[in-house]
Length: 320
Image (cartoon, rainbow, N blue to C red; front, side):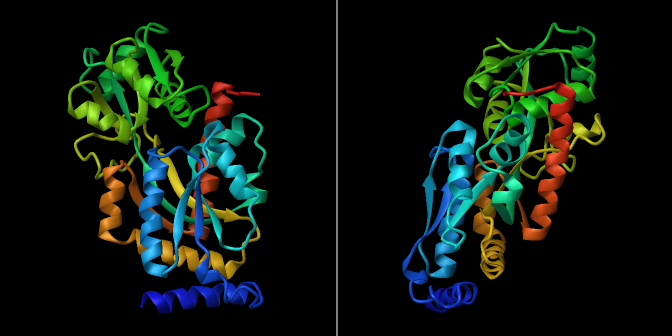
């Protein structure tokens, strides 16, 4: 079966490339460029996917880290790669959705990249120092609202996805709090644990272990439907209707990649994401599987851009 799938993939590429690559495709690895360092959630998730795709295709699929500039270096490298199916991108919220809204990027997402498949979403948690004087989201909002500019919130940096989500939360709840940016999620969370900062909104992967150990107090999750990854934490949307956001993870290809290749990759990715093993491994790194094919992924990207464009405009955030 593995050998047959490899032959079928070669045939797919042969149709798209006029037959010229039919003999060479099975012997070349497919690269998933990961624009983040090893160990980051996108990296871990894409290594799980790479392993499943390798098994399904009988074809080497490898993750290649190209970190730097908030994910923009690797994203640009993938955008400029040959559109032949051998190079695809581990795309994510920061370099694809939010960064182009607040600063210049060397790539144009609409012009240079094509959606292949959405993989999943990483929820965010609203957490505070353990001594924060509130028991739920409603009390949290009332406490902060009653003392403008007294409370502080941290983020992983100005313009980071976590920062933008926090700004949306503050604006929606009519809160005035002081932003304290840090160079990364870990120091932003450590400041809350130490009581140096009052609260933050960060990924489930980073916050949930701290909440379960009592190092921070968890109030609400960013997905309106809640999440099976943290079923005991209520959605923030219960108190702020319409608040529904997370950090997405998907696969994109260089623009111009032939349609048959995109469709074949999307089908194989959908099969990989339907695996119980894949879902369990994604859950272990804080990513909730939400598999969608190219067209649905493209529509989702438009929705995400509109959401974050409104946040950026309201908060007047620009990096250049």
